[in-house]
Each structure stands twice: as C-alpha cells, then as structure tokens.
Length: 499
Image (cartoon, rainbow, N blue to C red; front, top):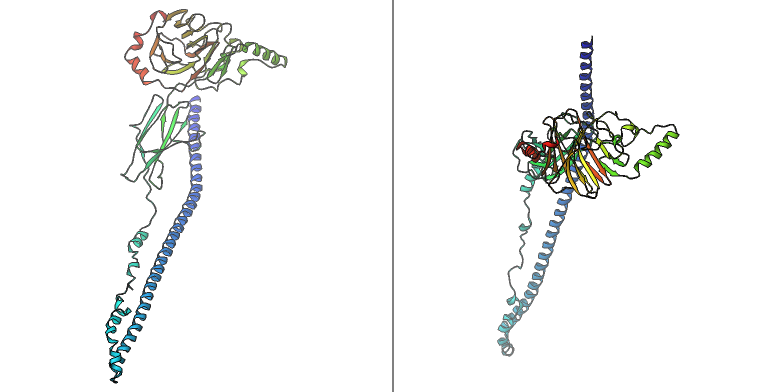
C-alpha cells in the first residue's frame, strides 16, 4: 500500500510539474500574441515614417533643382536680352552711317559733291568707331540646358532594391567555454553564421532558484549589459545569493537587434546564511548581516519583556521580526528564549548548518572594536560559553582592550599569530577534510588553519564587544584559497596544539 501511495505521489508531482510547464507556455504564447500586435504596429508606424521622410527629402530635392533651373533660365534670358538690345542699337547706328554714305555717293551736283567730299575723310573714323564694329557677334551664354538634366536610373534601382533590414542571427552560448569561479561568470558565445555587419552584443542575466530553462514569470528582473564588442564577457564581483543564474545574449548591427540566444542556466554554488538573531546576546543588535554592540540592549529588552508580560504576551525571541527566513539547511527554531547567549559570551550564530563540503565567507569588523572573534561552533555551544574556550568552538580572536593581541583559540588554548591584523577576515571550512582556515580577506594570505575531526554539524559563529562587524555571504571558495590548500600550505601553517 505504501509503495502504491509513493508511486502515486510521484505521478502527482510529475503531473504538477508538467501542468506548471504548460501554464508557463500558455502564458508565453499569450504574451507573444500581444507582442506581435504591438511590434507589428510599431514597425508599420516606423515604415510609414521612413517613407514619409523619404518623400519629404525627394520633395525638397525637387524644389531645389527646380529653383536651380529657374535661376539659370532667368540669368541666361537676362544676358541674351541685354546682348540683343545692344545689337539692335548697333544695327540702327550702322544703318544710319550706311544711309549717309549712299547719299554722298549719289550726289550729282558738282557744287555739292566737293562740299560733301570734304567730309569724307571723317567717314572711315566714324565707321570704325561705330557700335557695330565694337560689338561681339558671339552669344554670351548658350541656349543648351542639358547640364541641368538628371538621370535617376541608379537611384531608381536603389529604390527598387529597398527591402527590410537584415536581422542578425541569434548567438549560440558555448557552455563548454563558459566558467563560474571566484564569484565571477565568464560567458562565451559564437555566431552561427559569419556576419561582418554586427556592431555589438547585448547580454542579459538574472538570478533564480530554479534549475533548467528560465521561467517567464520570475521575481528577479533581467539585468542588461550593452555595447559588448567581443564574443565573451566576464561579470565580476557578483554575490551568489541564489542557486542559479539565467543568461541570454543578442547581436545588434547599426540599425536593428536580432533575437536572443537560447537562454542558459548556470549553477552558482556559494554559502549563504543569515545571522540568527534568536541566538544573539542581548547586547548585540542584529540587522540582517550586520551586528553592533548595544550597551543598553539587555536593559531595554528586559523592559520590553516586562511590558509584554504585563499584556499577557510572550517575550520569546522566536517571535522577533529580525529572525532570518529559513533555508533547507537552516536551523529550525529550536532555541528558546533562555538559550540566547548571555553573561560575557557576546556571541551570535549563523542560521545555516555546515555538514559537508567546502564553504567560505568573510567578515569586516570595526577596527576600534575592543574585542572581536570569528569562527565556527557546534550547535550545542553553551549559552555561557565563549568562542574558543571550549572544545565546541574554534575561532580567531582580536583583542584591543588593555593589551593588543591576535590569537587562534580552541578548547581554552590560544596561539599568538605573528601577522598584521586585517580589517577583513576570510573563513574557509572544509568539513570532510577537517580543515578550518582563516585568511586575510583582501590579500588571501593564510593566517591560521585548525585541523580537527568535526563530529557534529557546524555553525558560523561571531563575537564582538564594544564594536561592530558586517558579514558577507554568497561567496564561492576563492581559487587562491583552493590552490593554497592543494599545495599543503594549510597543513604547514596549522597548530596541532589547538586541534
């Protein structure tokens, strides 16, 4: 019976997943229908605007060329009319001289001819000075207007060849060349066909907790990176606070962009946790991943607790709004109000258990803090116990009170560390290898390594007195840390007396 029920549960789960996929696809189809309407209306509007712009340009060119013809015609008409008027006047003057000469030649009166002949010596001068002899008998301008003719054969062929712009093909993301490491993602892609008109690429990515193809309905928005000139891009300084990342890329030419590539999902493994405010000492004010010393914290909380008790309400920190959202490995709310660290154990724990694998996180503390510690602890660490003073915890401790010290502590034993105290500490825990290493968070210099056999799941642990600190999670184990561990640097730097 139980086997049949289990089989039925699997069938129900499979059907539910398939139903979700179909619903997602239906949503996709509906969205595509809306996009087809909107996009077709837009491209139609753009096409009409382009043709209207072309018509306007042709009209402007036509008006300009017609104006040129009119101006050339007016100029030539003016020149020819002036030349015609000058020729007319010259002809009239020449005809008068010709008439005078003829009349003189026909004179028969012997008395009159000598008188007329006396004036004949002036006639050659009058003739050569006449306008007709000073006039150019060549037209100043031509009546040929062929220089203003046009031949639009080439332009007509170009217009006839007008068509829709070529759209770049969708790139193909190469998963074998892509890499996720050191909180960076290098994405590599290629074009299926050679295209020398591609101007740039656009990359989009988003975080998700779902494996497989990206879902259409996702809480996280797509982040956009434009203007990529090469066929690869590296995203740096990422915080992997979700399990996966979706990626897609498209090619663009000078005018249009192509379709997105098939989206891919890359796993982004990293250690994510929050601070469990229900474990914190009353003098520690927890705000997400930040902690600040509050000298009045205990007194204020006692007053609030009494007020709540007076109203018949519980003062258990389980109901505190500062509690983090549980994750698959996060501790259930097993600590009651009296399990909160107290006395001189100014401690707060993380909310996610470490029971295998490698994990890394960093913490920056205020250098003026009088005391600060970071490490790991078993969940069973007593509420009065300080980090490093029992066999249930390991830590690096910085003391700025009275006498400055930088020590590695475990089981109430301490080792002075001969290294500058960094303001950022990195913690690397390899559970199965039994290695707990501390690094300078900025230079990745190894500071100390504990070698132990962990018998219980661990929790990140922190302590601070008269100061503050901030934890950074969602980090992968840095490559430099892995290299140090492989070379055995961790072993050579360990102190077996503290194991």
